[in-house]
Image 1 (tube, helix red, strand yellow):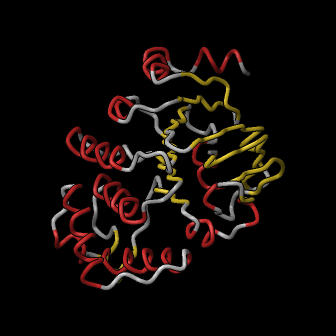
Image 2 (spheres, one colour):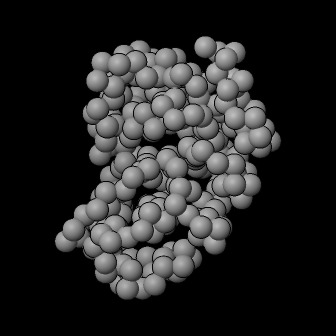
Image 3 (tube, rainbow, N blue to C red):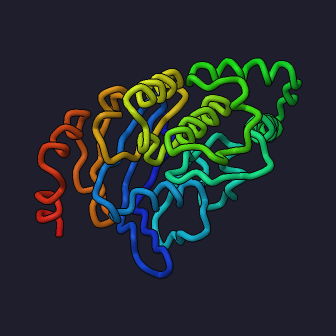
Length: 251
């Protein structure tokens, strides 16, 4: 089953072409990684999948479980099970983590026409997931990302993913700012959601995450195009050789 099917995707930001014909298919149970130099279009791809309005699709198609993504608002995409972990998560003063997650979870359940979860059951499940990420119970009462370090923000993004259990998770540099122990914890959280009904897209600069979350495929995005696809060993090759040799071949 195809969770995501992207065909000949062209995207501009502020009238400047960024993606120039991306093809990508993610099957249920698959984890794909996208690597590439800065400015190659990795985050733009994540943004356009999530529905940010600063990225304009000028050609191509995107299908999520057979549905036309371009016809879906960001809210509908989220309700249908698409999730984006931001590269730079925003702070939300005055809104606690537990409140945000409860509202998001119940909104998702309403979309699926399921009854809302009662407060005690939800809090118990939330505490369990937070502890799996090494987060103390008082974390849930703190304002979303306010005063958090970069690594803490990334673990907070992963907590949201564990709560919402999306069918398509797009993780934009979820490993940046993490020390070795935090990276291991985050990788364990990602692996815990790996199943046949779910697909994940990892955007990263570094192969160390991919040593812990072994992807099915690694794609190299340069100049707005996927120029090379390989197995997990490709990440190590890129670490050793960089991107210059590929950029020259596809310039």
